[in-house]
Image (cartoon, rainbow, N blue to C red):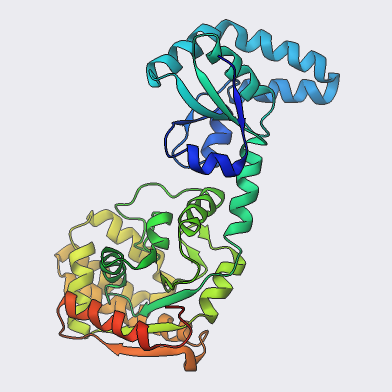
Length: 347
C-alpha cells in the first residue's frame, strides 16, 4: 500500500486514532520524542554515528550505501517487530526531518501490507511547534502556599471539578524539593518536558484561567521555559494558608513512609543550608521514626525560603486564603469562589 504524507495539523487529528512510530535511534528517542510514540530505529546509536561520520567525510552516496549495508540484514526483523506490535497494520511514522529513515521504514512496512501516514518534516516540525507553544502567553492563575499546604492535592481536586490545571510537578516527575525525587519515576529531559507541557497547553481553552502550582524555575533537573516562568511570576495568585499541624500531617502522609536511606540522603543534601546542629537533629529523628520532629526542623528552612519566593510576586496580585480546619470540599469551593472574584482571570 502507498504511504500518505501528513501535515502537522492533520497529525493532531489522526494521532487520536493511530499508533505513532519513531524511526530515529534509541539515543535520539530517549532525548525527546512525540509523547506516546514507539521507537523502531532504522539505525541504532552506533550505526547512526558511523553513517553520520561517513556522510561528513565521504559524502551522501557512500553514507547511504553504508547505511543499507548495516541495516539491510535486519530488514526482516524490523518488519516482524512492526507486525507483532501493530497487527492492524496502520500507523503514523516519523524520523528527524521526515527524510531517509522514515522513508525506508515506510517502504519496509508497506511491503508487508501496512498503511503508513508519514509526518511531513518529521520530529523537527513537531519540536518547532512545542518549543514555540510553551513560550506563548497563557491566562495563568497561580496556586501558592507554604510547603505542606497540599497544593497538589487541591490542583487534582480542581481538575476533577472541571477546571483547567497543569501539574508541573507531575510532568517533571519531581515534587520540587530535596525530597522531591523520592518514589518518583526518572525525570524527562528538559526538551521532553517541554513537549509534555506543550501537549497539555494545546488542549487548554485560552479564554479561561489555567491553574498552575507556584514553583521555582527549577523542578529537580527540569528548567521551566523562561517566558512561561516569567508569566508565572506576573500572574494572579491565590495563596492558601494552613496550620502548622495540618502541614506537618500532610508532609508525614506523603514522606514519612518512604525509604529511610533516601530520606537521610535528602537531609544531607541540605546540610549547608540547615547547618550542622539542625542536620544532625533531623537525621536522628528520621532514624528514630519521629516524623513530626524532622518535618518541623525542615519546615523552618523551607518557610524562610518560601518567604523569599513571595517577594517575586506583585502583592496587589496576591489573594491570601485561609483554608485551615476546612474539609477538602470546602477548600475547593473557596478556591473556586475566590477565582471567580479575582482580577486577572478570564472566566
